[in-house]
Length: 461
Image (cartoon, rainbow, N blue to C red):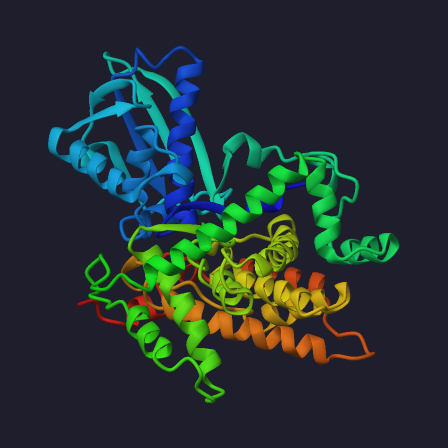
C-alpha cells in the first residue's frame, strides 16, 4: 500500500501535477541516462509536453519545472529563489547542466514542445523525453505521466499495472485495505481508530519515530506556508493582476480576535486557506494535500482547530488529523484519481475537502463510521466540480475555491457528528466511485485544459 507520507509531500507551487510531477519526471529521465552510461554522450535533450501539461503548462510552471528537473532540482528541496536564479542562467546563457554534471546547449523554445493537440490515451498529463548524441541520433526515449499529487509513472507502469488487486501491491502491511468498507471492518475487528490502524501500517514501512517525524515535518511546513502567506503582499505573477488578500484579512482578524460574530469562523478559515494558495500561486513551498491546487484546505482546518505546530498540546492532535485524512486520501488515490486533468477539480478540492472533513471529525472524537460519513459528505457536495483555471494559472477560481472547501469541510464534519443511529444512504466507497465515473464522463474542456468554463468566459487582462 501507499504511505500517508506519499499523500502529503513538500514541494513548490503552483501545481503538483504540472510542476512537481514534471520536475520529478525530468530528473528521473536524467537518472535513466546516467544509469545507462549515456550522460556523457548526450548533446541535446528534447521534451514534448502533451495534453493538459501543454495546454496549461505555461501558467502552471510546467516548462520551468521541466528545466529545473533536467538540471537536477528536487521539488522537496528546491528553494524558490535558487530555482529562479537557475532558470535565469539557462535563459541568459542558453546552457543547461544536465543533472548538475553534463553541460549542453539548451533553448527552451526549441527544446520544449507544447504539444497540446496530443491527448495521450493513458493519462492526459504526458511527457515524451528524448536524448540525442552529437550526430542527432536518439540515445534514449521515454514517455512518462504526471498522475496527480506529484505522483509519476512510466508508460510501462501504466500499460502493465499489477495483475493482483491493488491491496496486494506495494509494501506488506498488517492491515491492508482497498476500500472504505474494508477499512471500517478492520477498525471494528481490531478495535482501533482509523489513525491507529494507519499508524500500524506505517510501522511496516519504516520505524515509527521516522513516521512521526515525517508527520511533524509536514505539519510544520503547512504552518510555515500559512505564515509566509499572511505576510506577503502584492500582485501574483502571471498577468491576471490578482492581488493577495490574505494579509489584509489577517490584520483585520488579528485586530479584533475576540469578536462574537459567529461568521468570523469563515473569515479565519478563508484567511488561512487563501494564504496557502496565494503562496502556491507565487511558486512558494507548499505541501501537496493531496495536490497543490487544493493545498490550502487541510492546513487551514488544522491551523484553526489545532493552532500551530509549536504548541505542544496540539502536536498529537495534528498527527491524528493527518493520519486520518491521509487514510481517506489513500482511498481516493487507489480507487479513483486525485488528478484535475482526469477528474476535474472534484479530484483536487473535492478530495481535499473530504480528507479535511474526516480528519476534523476524528479530532472531535468521531467513530470510524462517522469519519467515513464526514468524508463522504465532503465529497458528495463537490461532485462535478470543474477545473477551469483562468489563463491556465492556479489563481482564479482556485484560491477562493480552497477557502470555500475549508468551510465546507468543517460543516461536513459537523453533519457527520450529528448523525445518530441510522447509517448514511451513501457510503464513502459509493461517492468515490461516483466521483470517478463523473470524472470520466466530464468533458475535457473542464479538466485542467483552460478550454471551458470560467477560463473562456472571463476575459484575461
